[in-house]
Length: 305
Image 1 (cartoon, helix red, strand yellow):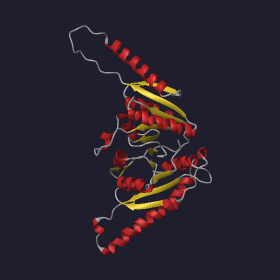
Image 2 (cartoon, rainbow, N blue to C red):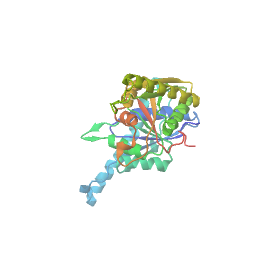
Image 3 (cartoon, one colour):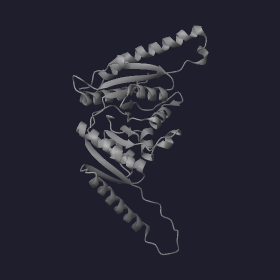
Image 4 (cartoon, rainbow, N blue to C red):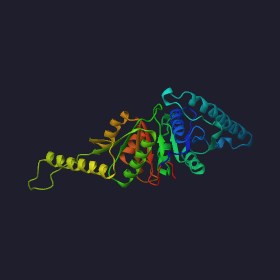
């Protein structure tokens, strides 16, 4: 299974996307060959023309701003690539001419550009609060409509040496696990598969004698652990396994800094934004502690071939 050869990186003018760009160029270098590297394109959403620019004489001013943004970002692409950590070399050479600046809301511009270019993987920087606005809404919207895997790079870019794949025994988690296996194999990274056991809250529902609550929980824990290892055996996975306990989102968030990348599946699509994500994916997207690769239900494999 091949790595993606068509990659799209969403850029912002403040430079929050720098690490995402570096990670994309690092992956592209490994997806192609020195003579034929993977293609990395860039997209930036420029604000729509304000109503106060409705007068004809003001239209040139808005257009000059858009052209200036394009020129600035093309220079920034080269600068950001040049600052890639030495541990990530070599990377693909950036091609600033592959940057497009389009008008509209970021989520719409990014999603439409991904479709029109046939991108197989989308890179996003972290969401940050700026002047009362948050990129979190853009992130949610892009993820909720994504038809290709989305890589969120919140921290300084680094080579991928370890991958964490949380699973919940659902069909979608098996799909994301397949992606994680493929990516780990291609990059020579160590794969760890995790499952979180969430102890149930037991209440008195009958006057009949019942086992001690801790005995019931112990039995459920043992049964879940057995199911987890049985699932890995059925899938032929002999890599490291991590059986955690507690709140699923909190447990994965706590484990996240130990890994270079977490691969998760999103749970359906919804216009309600965060409602489409499972609790773990939602928590990691909101407060990412490491790089996160979100696999949508409609995604096949990373190369989409």
